[in-house]
Image (tube, rainbow, N blue to C red; front, side, top):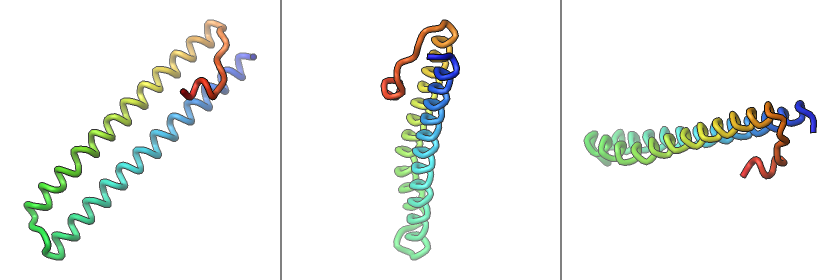
Length: 103
Protein backbone atom coordinates (compact mmCIF):
# COMPACT_ATOMS: atom_id res chain seq x y z
CA UNK A 1 0.00 0.00 0.00
CA UNK A 2 1.05 3.56 -0.49
CA UNK A 3 2.28 5.82 2.27
CA UNK A 4 -0.85 7.98 1.93
CA UNK A 5 -3.16 5.04 2.50
CA UNK A 6 -1.14 3.99 5.55
CA UNK A 7 -1.40 7.52 6.95
CA UNK A 8 -5.14 7.49 6.25
CA UNK A 9 -5.44 4.33 8.35
CA UNK A 10 -3.66 6.10 11.19
CA UNK A 11 -5.97 9.12 10.85
CA UNK A 12 -9.07 6.90 10.94
CA UNK A 13 -7.74 5.11 14.01
CA UNK A 14 -6.88 8.38 15.74
CA UNK A 15 -10.37 9.73 15.02
CA UNK A 16 -11.88 6.53 16.39
CA UNK A 17 -9.88 6.75 19.62
CA UNK A 18 -10.67 10.45 20.07
CA UNK A 19 -14.38 9.93 19.44
CA UNK A 20 -14.50 7.02 21.87
CA UNK A 21 -12.71 9.07 24.53
CA UNK A 22 -15.03 12.05 24.04
CA UNK A 23 -18.18 9.93 24.21
CA UNK A 24 -17.12 8.10 27.36
CA UNK A 25 -15.99 11.31 29.04
CA UNK A 26 -19.26 13.06 28.14
CA UNK A 27 -21.27 10.12 29.47
CA UNK A 28 -19.38 10.11 32.77
CA UNK A 29 -19.61 13.86 33.30
CA UNK A 30 -23.31 13.87 32.41
CA UNK A 31 -23.94 11.10 34.91
CA UNK A 32 -22.02 12.96 37.58
CA UNK A 33 -23.98 16.17 37.05
CA UNK A 34 -27.29 14.27 36.99
CA UNK A 35 -26.53 12.51 40.28
CA UNK A 36 -25.41 15.75 41.90
CA UNK A 37 -28.63 17.43 40.77
CA UNK A 38 -30.73 14.52 42.02
CA UNK A 39 -29.02 14.65 45.40
CA UNK A 40 -29.47 18.40 45.61
CA UNK A 41 -33.17 17.93 44.83
CA UNK A 42 -33.38 15.66 47.86
CA UNK A 43 -31.81 18.43 49.96
CA UNK A 44 -34.20 21.02 48.53
CA UNK A 45 -37.21 18.83 49.30
CA UNK A 46 -35.94 18.32 52.84
CA UNK A 47 -35.42 14.56 52.61
CA UNK A 48 -31.70 14.74 53.46
CA UNK A 49 -29.47 17.33 55.13
CA UNK A 50 -26.62 19.25 53.54
CA UNK A 51 -24.16 17.07 55.46
CA UNK A 52 -25.74 13.95 53.96
CA UNK A 53 -25.63 15.62 50.55
CA UNK A 54 -21.89 16.21 50.79
CA UNK A 55 -21.21 12.70 52.11
CA UNK A 56 -23.30 11.09 49.35
CA UNK A 57 -21.75 13.39 46.76
CA UNK A 58 -18.25 12.35 47.88
CA UNK A 59 -19.26 8.69 47.67
CA UNK A 60 -20.60 9.25 44.15
CA UNK A 61 -17.76 11.49 42.92
CA UNK A 62 -14.90 9.15 43.85
CA UNK A 63 -15.88 6.33 41.44
CA UNK A 64 -16.61 8.85 38.69
CA UNK A 65 -13.21 10.51 39.10
CA UNK A 66 -11.56 7.09 39.04
CA UNK A 67 -13.45 6.16 35.85
CA UNK A 68 -12.48 9.48 34.24
CA UNK A 69 -8.83 8.90 35.15
CA UNK A 70 -8.94 5.38 33.69
CA UNK A 71 -10.51 6.70 30.51
CA UNK A 72 -7.77 9.31 30.17
CA UNK A 73 -5.07 6.71 30.83
CA UNK A 74 -6.51 4.44 28.15
CA UNK A 75 -6.72 7.34 25.70
CA UNK A 76 -3.08 8.30 26.21
CA UNK A 77 -2.03 4.66 25.78
CA UNK A 78 -3.81 4.74 22.43
CA UNK A 79 -1.99 7.96 21.50
CA UNK A 80 1.31 6.20 22.19
CA UNK A 81 0.15 3.35 19.95
CA UNK A 82 -0.54 5.85 17.18
CA UNK A 83 2.96 7.34 17.61
CA UNK A 84 4.36 3.85 17.14
CA UNK A 85 2.34 3.44 13.97
CA UNK A 86 3.80 6.68 12.58
CA UNK A 87 7.28 5.38 13.27
CA UNK A 88 6.37 2.13 11.52
CA UNK A 89 5.19 4.03 8.43
CA UNK A 90 8.35 6.16 8.44
CA UNK A 91 10.42 2.99 8.36
CA UNK A 92 8.42 1.81 5.34
CA UNK A 93 6.74 -1.12 7.06
CA UNK A 94 3.11 -1.83 6.08
CA UNK A 95 0.36 -1.54 8.67
CA UNK A 96 -2.17 -4.28 9.36
CA UNK A 97 -5.84 -3.81 8.47
CA UNK A 98 -8.02 -1.40 10.44
CA UNK A 99 -9.81 -4.29 12.14
CA UNK A 100 -6.50 -5.57 13.49
CA UNK A 101 -5.34 -2.09 14.46
CA UNK A 102 -8.48 -1.46 16.50
CA UNK A 103 -7.82 -4.45 18.77
